[in-house]
Image (cartoon, rainbow, N blue to C red; front, side, top):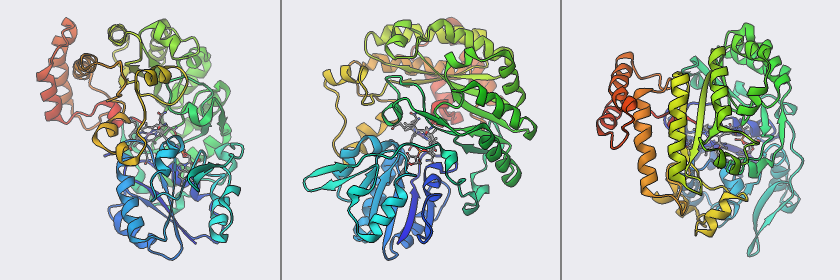
Length: 486
Ligand code: B12
């Protein structure tokens, strides 16, 4: 049986190691030849897929995120299945794991993985090859009779308990990305899940508050390998929450200090406020440049509704000042447009952002709109107002829903055009007055031009219809930080 691993094209300019499929590759049992097609870096991926999927007894494993990747995966898989009807197609990842029925309503998909793939792949390959009953394979869903059959998952295991990612099978130079962290930035992932259950977050469904970290020495060893064997000068740790455990963070920081890499990761504000001064110093010394935080809102009531573990608006300000003192840039993400009074909440959040920028002009701001995920709470309010997810992949990839996944067009019943306009206007002025540091293509003169023009409106707090700034952004091909984000 020939295994084809496929990472569909995600977003322009995102060259990142395809960890989702590399994680699967490392558990493919001996005797099953495999090949990896990554449409993000391989200009001949179409031809490679044709060739590989046309092999006898081929199985195609596809990783799918919502949004652009889904839009590419659907037509590609359909065309392959039409050409090779015997090809088995299995999907996994965040989209199929949550929207199981929509995937299995499509006859081109043979089945989906419900969670982590490492526990699925060996059993699935043996069952497919031997023609055994799929009901014995853990953690999958497939069509049976008129319905969908789901099997129970095996317990989750930390990533470090499996073999290393098979970097030696990739052309690693293709993945050395130029970012604000350095000329050769690689990505790594050092923990499974997230220990928190914020009720708007898109990973809670999958992990339900579980977090399994790789030990610090494992993280240090892989980082060393990326530096020594592949010349990494920057590392993005893509964990949902890299910093959940202070001891591990301090040990990683100490272990990578001498490597001279710049690094980035995602954290909770309350956790980082609790870190000791020594840990902050160790992190800064080790090359930590920027940390992404879910700040979410400038309104205490909304923060309480989001189950942010008691986070208060005042804490966001404290963290901003603490991070500034240590020279580690904070990147605050806000999720506007939750139920209640979203216009008033947006105004409060804008006012907080102005304070954050006054106290630390170097902080980064990312604005999203709340996009429902099937969790109790705000999702129920959306449903009561008539919100529902599409039932077919055709609807998901249509014009209305494909922008939904990118958190710009939430389709929630309480969102008004007025709110969307105000957020867009504020963001335009903000991105002119403070162009993001993450857009490294923006030259010094362009940056200065944006700042000078943006300053007039920012100081006067006049945000309405900033047409001149929009035109300038377009001319300079400015990339908003959330376009570059995860
Ligand atoms: C890297 C990344 C990206 C990269 C993509 C890189 C690539 N694929 O080439 C970029 C920057 C392009 C990106 C973009 C977006 N992303 Co993204 N991204 C991530 C991130 C940070 C890491 C993914 C990763 O490598 N994980 C490590 C691997 C090992 O784990 P994994 O992906 O979960 O894979 C395991 C299982 O899911 C499963 N599995 C996965 N695929 C398959 C396939 C098969 C066949 C099987 C059996 C199993 C299986 O097994 C794997 C091993 O255990 C995650 C958050 C996270 N920490 O996971 C968000 C995340 C996946 N992204 C998300 C989103 C929403 C987006 C965007 C849509 C949002 C936006 N900002 O507009 C965009 C656009 C998507 C697009 N362009 O298609 C969400 C998905 C939420 C959801 N429930 O749908 C996440 C969870 C972030 C979040 N917290 O909200 N992203």
